[in-house]
Every structure is written in structure tokens, then in C-alpha cells.
Image (cartoon, rainbow, N blue to C red):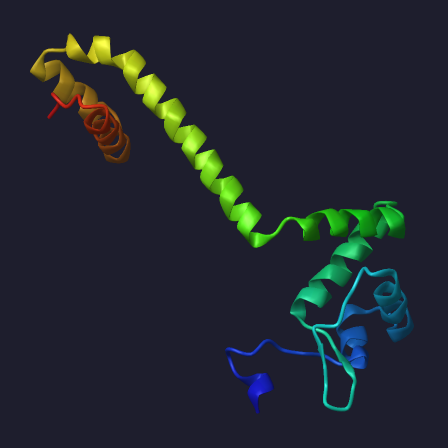
Length: 151
């Protein structure tokens, strides 16, 4: 039985999904017709099978309805979320990290004149005052910038 294995997601027929979600099978059909839900796959008997993500989506729909969003507004929200692909999310996160790294590099460059004037004891005291991760990050950035006269 693959359906119960740890790797395969649990799939539900519409009646099971109705019981789990607390909404009628007819409402699930209606949401599917509106494009709010989509079956994960079809069984060999051509039954629609839904997964745990669908169950989460139903709960989200019900929450949004309770907050007075119309079904059309909810559909538009889901559609905009669906347009963001995994690759786009990864690319966006990498861009955010690159921007953050650039900002850190600018800040370290601004600190360079001050750090260059520190005596060895002062530098040691400074590096003890900041977290080891921060100190390692500053040292790495200084190395990248070709300046490493600390520690």
C-alpha cells in the first residue's frame, strides 16, 4: 500500500476531504469549479483525489471568508501566490542575500578607518564584545576586501 507509506502523500476522496474539513462535498465541488481547489490526481476509477495541501487550502478559504473576503478576492489571492514559482522564490531570496552582503561590505568599509586605528588590545576587546558569528563575518568580509589585520 503506497498510499500509507511515509514518502507518498496521503490522498483523500471527496467524502473523506469533506469529513476532515467540515465542509460539504458539494462546496468542495463548487470551490473546484471556481478554481480555488484542484485535485492532486485521479484514481484508476476516475475519482478525484485531494492531498493535505488541499485540506490546508480549504481551511485558508474558510478563514478568509470569515474575514469577509469574497470568493473572487480569495481566488485572486491564490492565483497571485500560484504565479510565484519555486525558482522565482529562490532567485528572490538570493537577490536579498546579495543585497544584504553588499550592505555589510559597505558598513565594514565605513568601519575600516576606525578599526585600523585600534591597538591590538582594543581590537581583542572589541571582538570579545561581539558574538563569535559577527566577528567571523567581519573578518571574512575584511579578507574579501583584502584587509585582514585583526586577531
